[in-house]
Image (cartoon, rainbow, N blue to C red):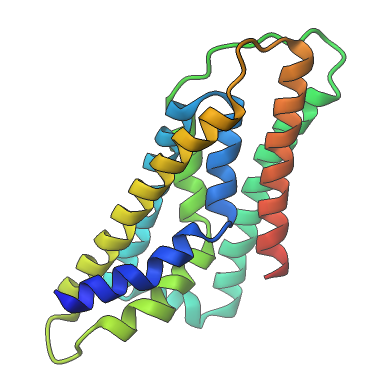
Length: 201
């Protein structure tokens, strides 16, 4: 139990460190509300759940050991973030009247899922940290899954909490066309920064 607590204390600062996931959550909250950020958090957790299974099965080791395959996944993830950013920034330069529409709550989940799934940084975190807390004399698969679930649980708690905080900071009483353009532009800019962060790191 002390090993699991130590692991939680180790990864918690990493979760709070701004990165593509956090910027994506912020963009969803700014584009809609706290619920959108929480739904995006669900998607991100599902994405990391796939990473957990891959790590447990050892498939991720093959991906990391293959530079070409790893870079392919990396650039697909960057391209996906840029695609989301482009769609938001495009509305800023749209001369037509902007209408604020209800965004289906399934979109943040799907986008969050692919953002985490295509983020190779998450995979590297698993390989850089998880092995340090696994006892090789015991069942490594079960230990890896438990540690992964702790990591995902902390992500869920932190990002849902941040969604509510971000919503209170960015909440507007009314959103007209001009404000919507600013929100879309800022959200798109955040996603573009996230993509750039992945590209240069």
